[in-house]
Length: 87
Image 1 (cartoon, rainbow, N blue to C red):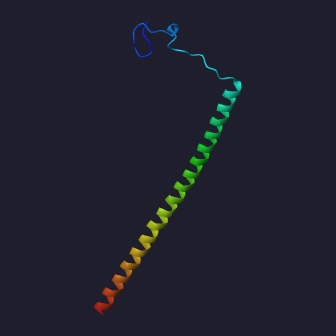
Image 2 (cartoon, rainbow, N blue to C red; image 1 turned 90 degrees about the vertical axis):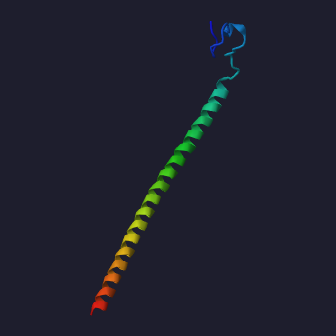
């Protein structure tokens, strides 16, 4: 029988692979609780990231609109100067 990495003649009966663990129910409950807390923190972080991403998109759209307005004012001002020069 081949071993876990394809090594020939290695089995769990040889004592190399030991699946026995010394964890009791308290340790598993503690680990499970820690994983739940980590999951909760990650969910909170994801919500904050989504909120920041939304605010960034709003800021970028506002900035784009301000640039368009400023460009329109400059174009209108240039047109007015040309009209004055023609008169």
